[in-house]
Length: 78
Image (tube, rainbow, N blue to C red; front, side):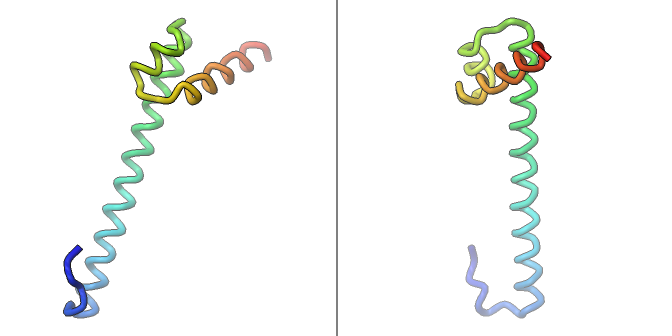
């Protein structure tokens, strides 16, 4: 980040707000991508794909996919 010591207070605050906005947007995009991967994994499991295949497709961890599979199985028994 650039040296902000010599910036007027208004400019410093404006840059801080911009940085915070970009950080927030980046987090929102990452969350959306994760949700999309989880939905793809869930649908893939519903279609009968094996956990390892779903992991390879989505990039999710084995644990994450197995948790989805476990919640799917719990819903089927209820």
